[in-house]
Length: 83
Image (cartoon, rainbow, N blue to C red):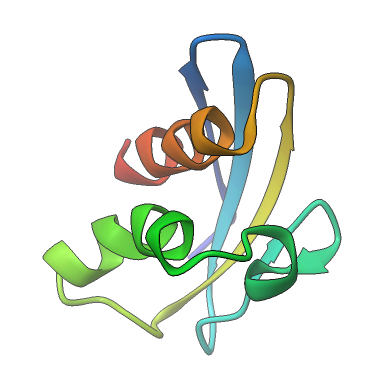
């Protein structure tokens, strides 16, 4: 599988997601998911598409996100992964 590139937007936040097959590593702006989105609610929003499709841990995700607040960023990431 090649790398998939999708964009998600929420309010003024823009997320660019690069998805490849892997072990389930998620990096956001070159930081681990838990270091960037520190609350459980925000982490849940980011991983929700994988939980719903039962593909948790099957893909490595590299995310570049900017603009807006952390909630808008998490929701932009969720939209990009869902696409």
